[in-house]
Image (cartoon, rainbow, N blue to C red; front, side, top):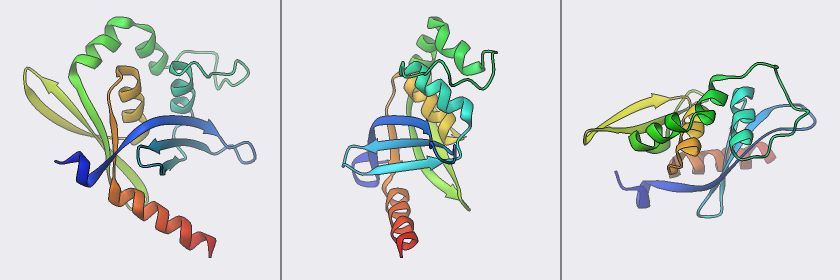
Length: 151
């Protein structure tokens, strides 16, 4: 699979809630200057991404309890082990209106690919400091949809 031709690398990720309607969003800023958006992602993932990026506001809290995301990012041995096994994350498919990601894992030289919820895969890539890619066709299709909505 050639990332240069078929995929575009994500340079940065923002996760937030739209102020007016509260929709949870992850924005992937791509190396070619475009953006790829994921809407209605789990709120816990938005909060977890902001925690690891140190952008959490204290007044934004869904619950007083910790989540699995908090535990993963809190235990250095867990993130170190994840870093050893995760190669990359690719948002590479869509089924109806739901995006699908592939996480590439490596165990003793054997590559295993698992299909994941994109927001969860993005979180794992961020916490393990691994690259994220988006299939160019998905970016182009999203741009076309935006243009048609403007009409």
